[in-house]
Structures are given as C-alpha cells and as structure tokens.
Length: 328
Image 1 (tube, helix red, strand yellow):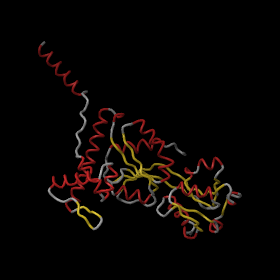
Image 2 (tube, helix red, strand yellow):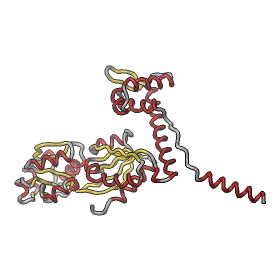
Image 3 (spheres, rainbow, N blue to C red):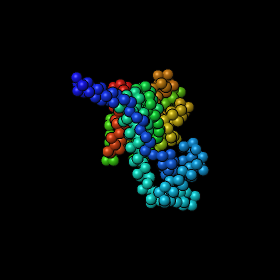
Image 4 (cartoon, rainbow, N blue to C red):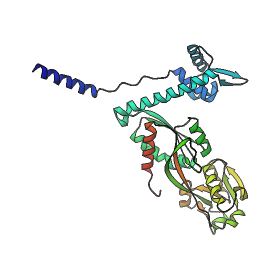
C-alpha cells in the first residue's frame, strides 16, 4: 500500500509539473546592447535617440558603458559622421544574432503556453499595392488570432524592400517578382493586374480604347523608377518592341495614391494596380482604357532570407495565403 501510494503521489507530482506555467524568459540583451544596435544600424547617435525616445546623452552613456565592458572603442568618428570599428563590427554581428535568438525564445515559450498568448514582433516590408490594398484586412484577422504579436509594416518600392530584407531590416518582403535571385526564398501570395485608366472628364474616356500606336501619341503619367507597377508596364511594353522612354510621359510620381490623385485631376492616362482603383471605377470617377495587345498581370510573392526558420514568419505566411479569396 505504501509503495502504491508513493507511486501515485510521484505520478501526480509529475503531472502537476507538466501544467505549471512556463517562466517568462529572461532577456538575452541588456538595454545598452539594444541602444548599441540602434546606433550601429543608423550610424548616428541622434537618430538612435529619436528611434528609442531617449535623450542623446543617455545614448552616449550606454555606449560608453559597453565600451567599458568590452574594454575597446565601438565607434570612431570620421568628420561629421561615425562608423563602427573593426571590433565594433564583430560585436554588432553577434549582438544581432543574440537579438534574433531572444526573439525566437520569447515567441516559442509564449506559444507553448497557448497560441493566443504568443508574444513577439514581426517586421514586414511590402510594395505599395500590397501594403495599401491587400494586406491590411489580413493583418487585422491575424492580430485577432495572435493579439500579442507586434507587427510593423514598411511601405517601400520593390527594389528597396529586397535591399531591406537582405540587410535584415525586415523579416518578410511582399513584392512583385520579375527576376528571382538566389539569396532569398519565394512563396507565391496573390496576383493583380495593372490597368490603364483616365479621369471620367478626360477625352480618353469617350471611346475608352486605344491601339498601341495611339498610346504612343497619348500623354501619360507614370510611377517612379524602381516601382513594381512601372516594372510590369516596362516588361509588357517590351513584348510589343516598345520602351517606356517611347511614351509621352508627362509626369512621374512616387506612390500609387499620388499617381491616382493626379489622374483624377488631369486629362492624361495612367497605369495603376487594379486593386488600387476599384472604388473609383465603381463610382465612375475613373474609366478603364483598354489598350489593344497590352495585358499587364503580375504575381506577388513572400520573400524570406535563405536559412530563415523563425516559426512566426512561417505562421504568418501560411495564414496570409489561406486568407486570399481566389479571383479577388
């Protein structure tokens, strides 16, 4: 009986241990390390102070504290700017790795407790079409599922998103992909069309149809170099042996909304993502102009760095892919 009771008690103790709340993980990095990361990323004490909402003297104290801890200079001044020393670059590399480990620990431990309690942060970089017209509703739904995940979205053109991803300034890129590179993984997300539109008051709205030859004699407004919209237009024009430089470009604007508002106020033709002008087409403020032999479709992909295995990134990508309604 005694042996049986002891076995039962041991079993109950082990069972109880299994359901005890997991302890909150201790921080891997000190505040001084986080300050150092911000200064190193910006190569500026003042920019780091603004980003962290602390004073510049406080930034300097944290850097001096670390320099005392490592017994070496982490930065050197070059004129009006600063740069990392050789030792500073080495420490920067390892502290970046330590920060990533800390982030994964926090997410994995909190997820083990309960998925709804999962805590962590995710930084996305998305092209204009995605960040303004596709991803907001998905972010809202994802946040309802995992409310303690802090998500930040950076809106840049395609070229800048790829650069930010490779420099580890973002975790995931969501952009149109024309030429794949070997440094990143690609997961298909969704598709969109780029269409020609004009204001309802424009003379182009009367027939709402142009031949390729007529397009060359039409005033157009375009996006800036580096945008996915312009790249898609350039690619399709090339199939007709036409260069973007052959078009009568009246203006080039940075940003989809800026271009859309210009077209609404002007009489010229513009090329915009279909998802960006859905409301204006329905309201009759804009009119789609069909161009013979020109159909511009583009595919958007999730971009991640080769070797990236952070489970939060995988969860977000899978959730987003499931959220897209076919044909939407």
